[in-house]
Image 1 (cartoon, rainbow, N blue to C red):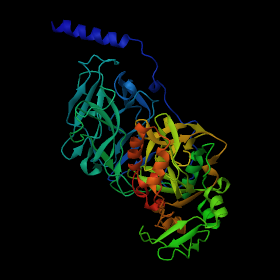
Image 2: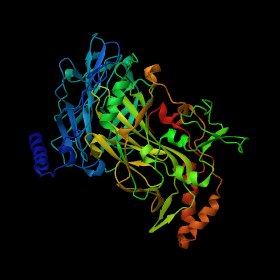
Image 3: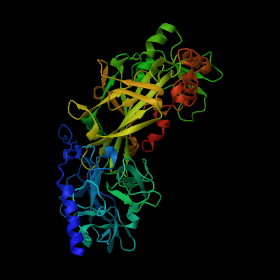
Length: 558
């Protein structure tokens, strides 16, 4: 009887495997369009190995051998694939397997570890079977088994082992890490589950990253995944930690500049964009004024380098910057000057200094009025959305192991989106293409319409290619890299912590009434509720603060 069941199970498996699978995005591996350049010398940046302290060295492995795959469930219902890092460099051991959804090209990495002292890494003492696909009637390549290593006392597991047989993996297949060299981690993006969306009470596979992230945080992302039968249980996998707080793998100033020249994005503006960027110095030199509370009738011209701006303090409302008073000058300055534009770079350590984030800040003298889409009707919103001064940014995430661009963060009003390099559009080599939305200047990786709202009512974010564009590599300035100490002199305007625009006092109720006159009766109340739910940043009532007061200056992107 047992033999019959075994044969029947094998037959089912063979039927599943014999079904002709259509080609999937993951069947192709992604590589950047151009080879990586040779980086300027100095320090440990781009050397391939990072020392995390106490004898633990790690390498980033991005070559894989597939172990098992499913072809349904997960993002776009295309399944996911599971891999071992292979080949491993001499002396390095696997810390965990890699997985990603099948709906994008194969592109990822995991860390492998080497123990220089004999106590940083140890074999597990056993394995626990977390999950298997054995009893599931799903499209899959054979049967998958996901194992959790049982670490010895004082050690932690950093990843799973995936096999295609029910036998436990050899104990030497994976190594665990001494607890004091690890950190707590949490769910990152959803990789796979049996349904098209993650199930809080079902089986899920998630990517992981350190729970504490920022310029001072020491947690190191390992690139592995966690497989759990409920999302409410504690995460069973740990991350690494840069126990030595070693910054020697961070790029020096020459390397930062070389990195940016290799990856400097192109920003395309909508064909109808009226309000373009400028440099901060151009804005000041062309009549921007500094106002002080209580002395509103005596605004002060700002020196072109911002040296007469109040330094430090807090955003207390005591000062603000505004456009020139004279109408002709005001209208001209509002429109910016693309030829005089400049981007400002902030380099900072991320994930325990195994990555460098380079934030690319763009300044616009003016943020234009918003437009809304209400069902099938497009309407201008009058003054809603307008404000003086607009800071937008992109963030390039660079591997300190080899200098490769892993992803870019696109700021979108009060939030934003990380996009892997495999999902980016490139031109002129490894330079990503970015699209700035009409009037609002939110950043997107692809052109078209993004509706900021609910259902069929929202603020329009329209993007498209045009002859108006900025090659950010032609005029950039590194304005901050705190880990380099005195190597960089910060411009005075960077430490101006008040508003870059006045608080506007237009009557929002009056603006809403003007718009509602254009709407059918049943849409008026829905539109009114939507507009009043928007934050001040979108409504344009408050002038923005500068880059240093944004949460991402010292933290990870939200």
